[in-house]
Image (cartoon, rainbow, N blue to C red; front, side, top):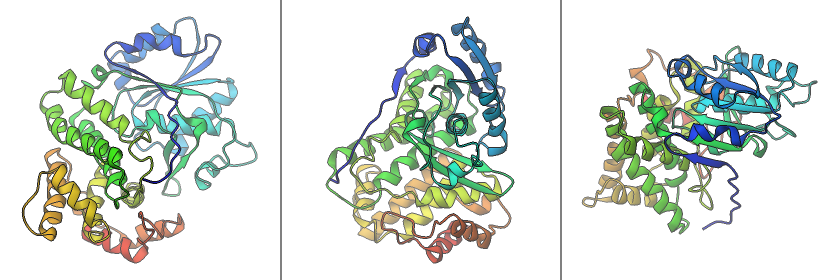
Amino acid sequence: MNNFILHTPTKVLFGKGQVAQLRGQIPADARILVTYGGGSVVRSGLLEQIRSELAGLTLFEFGGIEPNPTYETLMGAVELARAEKIDFLLAVGGGSVLDGTKFIAAAAHYDPAKDPWHILETVGGEVASAIPLGSVLTLPATGSEMNMGAVITRKSTGDKQHFFSPLVMPRFAVLDPVLTYTLPARQVANGVVDAFIHTLEQYLTYPVNAKVQDRFAEGLLLTLAEEGPKALVEPENYDVRANIMWSATLALNGLIGAGVPQDWATHMLGHEITALHGLDHAQTLAVVLPALLDAKREQKRAKLLQYAERVWDLRSGSEAELIDGAIKATRDFFERMGIKTRLRDYVADANIDTLLAKLEEHGMTALGEHGDIDLVQSRHIYEAAW
C-alpha cells in the first residue's frame, strides 16, 4: 500500500428528513446564496422547504445551473455573490450544481485582475480563498458532495476542464434518499454508472497489496450492480435508494483511492466527447471505459482478473477469456441500465481528430496510472469505442 494523507472534513447528515437539520449547519448571520439547477427542486417543493427551514436568515437565490455546468452561466452567480457580499453558498441539486457552486465559491474570491477561467487552467493551484459551502444532494452520482473537485465547461471555446482545492470542500452534505424518488430513469442510470466507473478508475490499475481499499471498492461495485437495476423498477424503494446514494458518495470521497494508484484516463477522454458532442457525462464514460480496458488489458491484467472473479464471479477459462468476460459483463451492466456503450449510438461522426487536438491542448498526452496513454493510444481507444 502506498503512503497517503486522507482528510474528509465534510459532515454528512444522512437519511429521511435530514433537511430539517439544515438551519443548524449554517451561521445565523450568514448572507446565503442558494444555488440550484432546473425546475425539479421547485416542482418537488424542496426549494420551498429550504426557504422555510432558513426563514429569518438572509437568502439570495441563483437557479439555472445546467448539467455540465458552464462558465458562462456561473459567472452570473459570481457577479451576484460579489455584489451581495455572499459569505455562504448552499448547493441544492446533483453533481453539476455542486461543481458549479464550487467554482462560484472560488471565483468570487479570485484575483479580480484575472479571468476566473484561470482557476481551471491552473487546476485550482492558485485558489487562495473561497466562500464556504454546503449541499443538499438530490442526485447521487459524482461524489462532489464530499470531495474537493469540480468540472466546468466553457461553451464559447469548447473546453471542459477540472480543478481541485481543499478550500471548496463542502462543510456539510444533507443526503436524504427520499429526495431521489422523482428522478427520471435516465438520471438514475447516469448516476449509477458514474459512481461505478469512479470506483473502477481507482481499482482497476495494478496491485499494491491494499486489501482494505480493494474490498471496499468491490463492495461498492457489487452494491451498485445489484441495486442499480432495482432503482429503475422500484423508484420509491428507500433501501435501494439509500444504498445507491451512500455508494456514490463513498466512490469518490477519497476513501477507496487512498494509498492506491489511480487511472482517470476514461474521464479525461470522456470530457472531450461531452465538450464536443454534448453527451451526458456518464454516457461518455460508458463509451470509453470498455475500449480502454481492452487496450490496457496487459497493464491491468492482475486487477482485471481479480475484478472478474470477485465482482462478476467469473472463475473458469483462460486468463484472456476471463478478462474478455469481465469487460463484457461491465458493458452489459451499463446496457441493462439503459446506457449505450458505443459512440455511434449517439453521434454520426466521432470527430476523433478534433477530440485529440483538444486532449493535446489540455496537456492530456500521458494519461493512465502509468502515464502511457499518449495521443496515439487515445486515438486507438476512441476508434475502438466507435
